[in-house]
Amino acid sequence: MEVIWVLENVKRDKLFYSKLQLTLLVASVSLWRKYHPEHYTVIYCDNLTYNTLSKLKILHLWHSVRKLDYPDDIDREVFWSGCKTKIISETNQPLLLVDHDFLIRKNIDKHLNTNVLYS
Image (cartoon, rainbow, N blue to C red):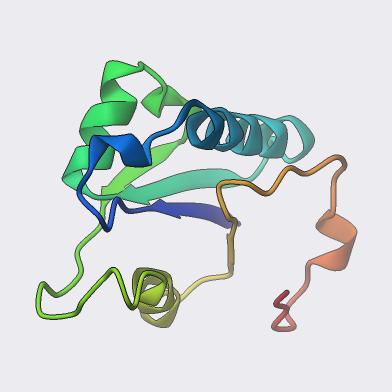
């Protein structure tokens, strides 16, 4: 199963990357991998986020890093979650989309099946 994080700096401002935000992101993916080692982790991010995570040397926490490609004619400050909807709509396989501040504390595979689940 693919487990996806999406992080886009919609304000295009380096202040977006607070210590708390980055710590939660690292904790989120690390805990997910701890409790779900068989899942394939992916992060979608814009160029500024990619560069920030690269400088911090934490991109290795995900199995795959993918460029976030989203039309420029959409005001992302208003529709900040639109990129998540786009990624979900383009997939043809089971996936989970995890927010950067979601911290899992145990394996939840028994709750994952072919049904559509959302929270």
